[in-house]
Amino acid sequence: MRLYIIRHGETDWNRTHRVQGHTDIPLNEYGRHLAEETAEGMKTLRIDIGYTSPLSRAKETARIILGDRRAPLYDEDRIKEMCFGSYEGMCTGGEGKEPGSDEFNRFFTDTEHYIPPEDAETIRQLYDRTGDFLKEICEREDLQDKNILVSTHGAAMTALLNRIKGNLSVSGFWREEVPPNCAVTEVEIQDGKPEILREGVIYYKEKVRKWKTV
Image (cartoon, rainbow, N blue to C red; front, top):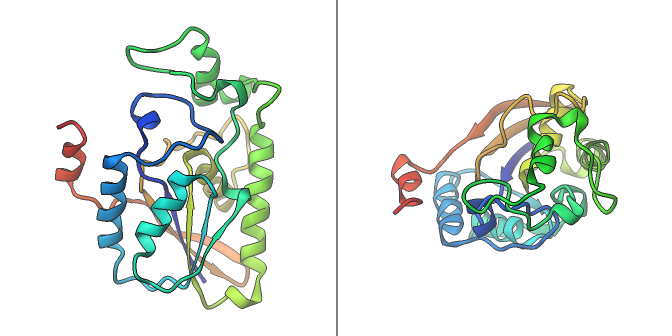
């Protein structure tokens, strides 16, 4: 079995440093372009089935990547982005940075002391639900010979990859940076054990990165 785990393309809230979480923000024009370039780079890969977060930014990314393939695409709540509760919609950087955003930014800078709002998830809860999804995929006999697309989000993808690496700590959650939009990690699963083959592969060209600022 092989997994291709991808973070969704860019949204307007990504660009303006707003917390998304469970808020359903669609891809912007640049985000669709990134997904299209990534689809072109992955066009020779066999993909038999797809799982996507039900949020539109991940679902549209998955549909663009799958293209004309006849692979079924299933919504999967366990790979939704982490819920940030009342922090969602807050601008945490740039000219529009809002008061109180430093508390949220502990999620990235001081994860061990990040305190989520009452209506939000903890990092441990994120580890649990994404880990449950990964365990099920690894154990399913009907998927052992399949190539699978998994379209998800920055924190959810990090939780999945941390588990594969054997890192389930809260303080060490961000040992790596947030995966870039449309970054792809390839994972091989043999005898129920996942192994990362390639991490954070970018299929779009430098000229596409520059197009963002035009």
